[in-house]
Length: 283
Image 1 (cartoon, rainbow, N blue to C red):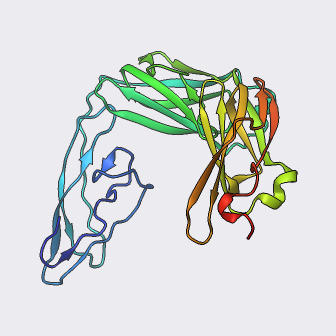
Image 2: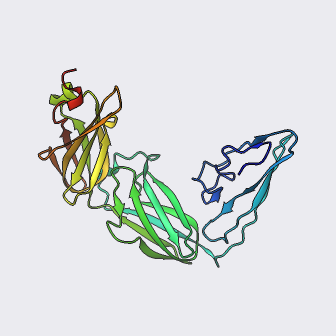
Image 3: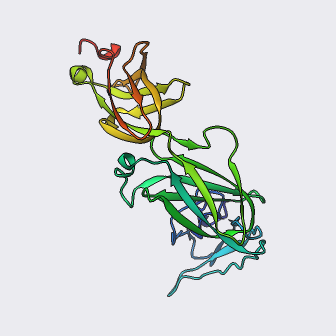
């Protein structure tokens, strides 16, 4: 909104810094401070309507007026009303992950994202770090829920297809089992024989037998991709970008190099440029 004498940019950013609370924008880091500036003749700026949509609590849409900062920062307190009869805990199990793959994850490295949807349509999303077989999540509202997992490397998803997996949160410790037994890893690198033709290389695209694509920026090569669905992967195309005008050229590769990724193992795929990019040829 715009008010005479007030400059509200960017007021869309979160005011409270908690996932599920803010001003209709992406969640921001905790303790983020938003500063609004305006004319000295306006002691307050607003109204600023925020929202709170947190699992286990009733929705709230408080409206605030930003107060003038003097010798301290004014604060507002929002009291949320619980909508659940209790709070439970669950264990998250990473099942079937081989020791070979597990050894490539550092404890502070994100392995993927777990999303939990609740009956009231609210959701809880958390990053899973490291490859420890078990971890515990606490403070989840009682009731029916559904979960889905997506890795950060190569878009491994569980369940493989269909809707999120239903489960229940109650008095007893529950468990979510993410089966990773069918995943492997692949080290993707540029074939040394194509090094002289790599000028302008922008990305390569791999596909699995069922058509699942994986696009890899050239700047990320060579790279080890973990939690890749097992099966035969093939380089399907290669993209070039003209450094002068930014124009993109995509070249399909009907007979691109292939690799078979076995569950729990690491394979190597050397990708090709398929020849110099047409717009770079002869330069």
